[in-house]
Image 1: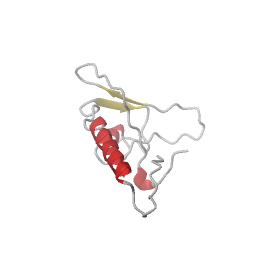
Image 2: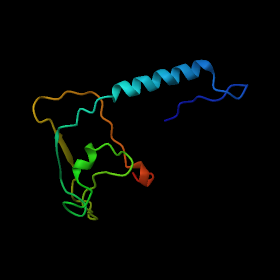
Image 3: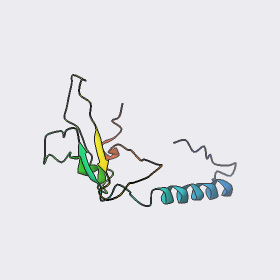
Image 4: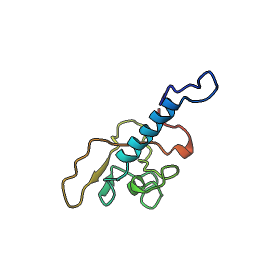
Length: 111
């Protein structure tokens, strides 16, 4: 994300930019303050290494955003579709924002 917040002529970030960045942080914290997927059931098309491998879909819902993740089984043919489904258990779930991210602890790997 390019924030375009350069230092001013004194080498510091301006007070106006600092204030806007704080407001931006508050907005992001508010938007993502509640994980609506917690408590949902989750299933996936496949799991790399099979059940118990550590790559199961439940990793999507844990709180470790650096090192745990779901991974489908390897398919070099490119013919298999990979999917993950998160389903509310009790009631209809409405949302307007989804956060999808890679396991950044492993470095950038998404093509």
